[in-house]
Image (cartoon, rainbow, N blue to C red; front, side, top):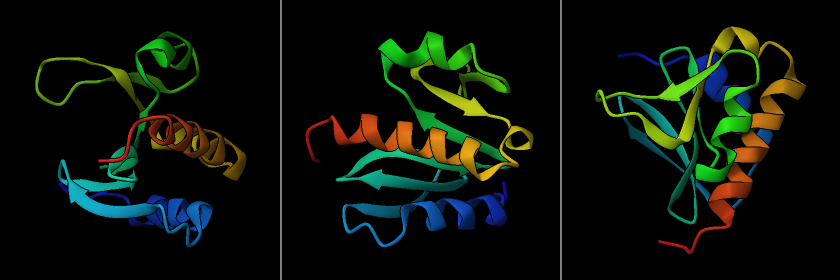
Length: 109
């Protein structure tokens, strides 16, 4: 599956040259990891965001979200955000910042 390169570039722009963030191709897309913990990624036209188990319900109440489920087993703590809801840079930035904040709260891998 191809992933949205434009969305990927916008995430790179948001993250800048943060030395704590690395990129890795995975899930047929691309992931951005903070000290080895996935924070956000792009799969197809969607943004994957790691919000943590306690943040799942609040994230799912926001427009264009659904539970992350690639294998038939929903993953609590992860959401997919429809790319069509990310046209505004502020909307994308909020999700990227949330994913990075959660990943940063985890022990480095």
